[in-house]
Image (cartoon, rainbow, N blue to C red; front, side, top):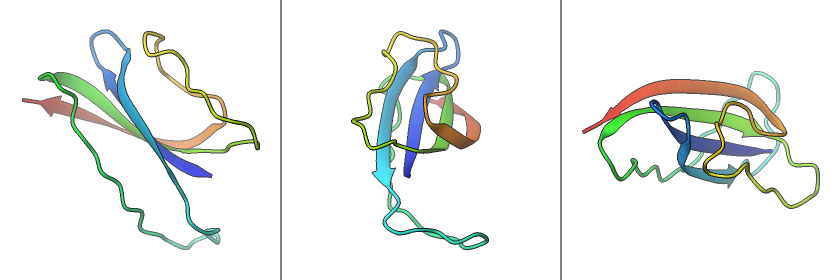
Length: 88
């Protein structure tokens, strides 16, 4: 499993930036973990959605959808949390 994050432009619905980080060990039910994550804001001011999700890889190389595609769910994505963010 990996933790994935992505910035989506609120107006166009297109992905601006994304990143993945591995979960370093199994996480038992009810347990918590802390993951280091360097998060860089989009390069232009505006309204964005910042989404965090868990992504299950099936032993193949992962290729995200094209940048200009509308981004809602990605293949293998499960639990997801989204925040509305204004970049100034």
